[in-house]
Length: 448
Image: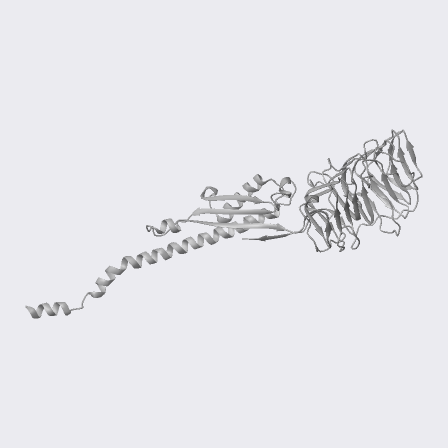
């Protein structure tokens, strides 16, 4: 009996089955967990790819005019469902939009960042307690950001010299949805002083700037790469004859027709002058609008050629102009040629120039907006006549009701009393935007 008991205790037959029975639940748990993990990982990978694609696609649309976040939200939801090949109800899509700086350009609703977060249930192969909570639902997050480029609404082209963008007194530039560039490498390429303020989506100086934090919103970036002249290929046709010479219109309502206007052209008094659609070339003479005159025109381009060319729009006048929609000067409201070695005068100081739709282009000239350089509230004496004009205290309003306005000039000077608004509603306008101003190339990348 004792021998049989010893033999039983020493016997090892059936150990594998016993061990297998004990270990099998653990093996099944590990195998099932591995399969569940693989399914969850595959789902999360698909989800991440869909989130990345949706964020990048939405970022590409951020700089389209009139893009509405609520419309982008629905577009993203549809895109995600199609990419994942699932019912939209099966995936939770959360979209948020970021802004460059919450306390600056955000006030104008400028968006430059999209975050897409997706989550959905995973169909697990093996229901295992504890693993369902761990792998039963997965999520993915992607953020795409737009950097550089964007909308450009002002370029000061001069590569040297201080105060290439110069604001003084209580002048204002409101360009909250677009960028202002200065190509000057000088230490004071951009100067905003006294009570003046430059508000933009971005102010970028190839050199430096002068002014306090109260003068800028946001503060300028420095050492920026220069922006090439976007309209260098635009060349006005050289005139061969004059259609009109030394025209004077005073206290008369009149329609003018496109053509070549030679010598000085003067509009004054109670004149209400309408420019019919087309190109108006002012050859070796200046266009003066003064003493209460009104100048309006739809679909017009004003081209200034020759060393004696210039533009003087005095304070007590009203102008409302929009650029040509077709032809060689499409999108160009004011054009000044490059063939000059003389400091020509281009000054807009009208108290009401609220409609100026198009690009103002003068690559070799300074554009002066306003007529009160000393900031005393009174228009400065006219450099030609010596007379002080301005029934409205020399305040000037430019661009407020324009769908869009862009300025490309050698230098830009904005004096006291001026409120210059550079809008960017490109899709809301029938005037085309020349390449290089308005929406331009930009970098779009995932940041997480």
